[in-house]
Length: 402
Image (cartoon, rainbow, N blue to C red; front, side, top):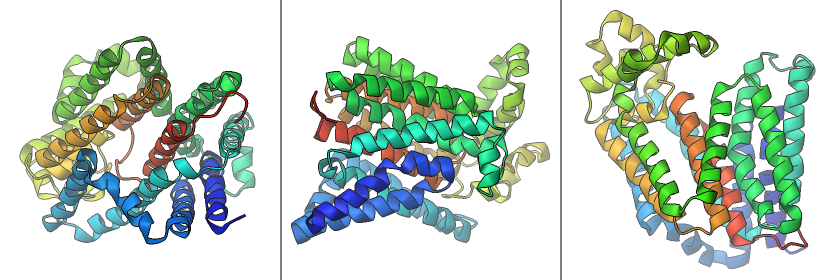
């Protein structure tokens, strides 16, 4: 085996086992993705030498690439007024390297995957789902055996990763008539693991993703794009007033039904962060300031009970987090990234288009209720999913092979 192929084969193994690694160790995906990215990068340079550099940089000069760079530049600029620059740099140190790794992986891996990689990934995802189901049925005994915490929530990150990865990986098999049973089995097994867990966000993402993928399959593209585009626009535009809207509109019966999800506290948290946005709407408090948000200048004018709710460290809504930390400029740049992404998705063939729309809907639903936007494991999961989506375009499997 040549050096380029050897590097890529090793990287393919790392890519394939991301969900299984997360099931066994729920913070492992950033490391696994970084290893995969380094191996594929080594393979690309071993194959092309210095000519690999333009290959890596070309997407960055597209409209979407420039929008992403603009958003990241604003994150860096916001460090100038962050009251906690060390905290901001620490958050950037978690998010930045993983973002670079997933960019390299999504750019280089799809054209270089050995033909056995998708089936290995399917087996790894199936084993990961079975591990989660078995852990829940056995009262978390496997976690105790591994010396880990045996609380049910330790499986939340793995199942959220399953939500992201299962659809794009299944779409790889769905284009081959004799492999569609593999796609269906993956989706069913992933759904079983997700719905068995205690993660309401994962269940919400699963439902949103499956529903949107089905709609994108049966409706003309313009309708699917309109649904997702409208949802994203509303989620971002209304984020600063989300708490007030929910406080006025959510019936008490729904709060009672969602008591295990702390819905009342989540509404109060959203109201508190929304009030902080109103106090400094233009530039935000600075990138990565969420963990110490009660101490930022915008929070000082709030009532004590409002500041108390800011102590959770994040607003349980990534759209609102962008507003709170990066202000209206950050929100506009984020909107540009989202809608240019939709423009790119619009030209995909039908099956990858449905999978991409499902992924966007699932990720947006989770981002609307989940933890911080800059977490490395979340970035790694998204990058893995995008890599598989691009792989289904780069080399769709024939009907007689994997």
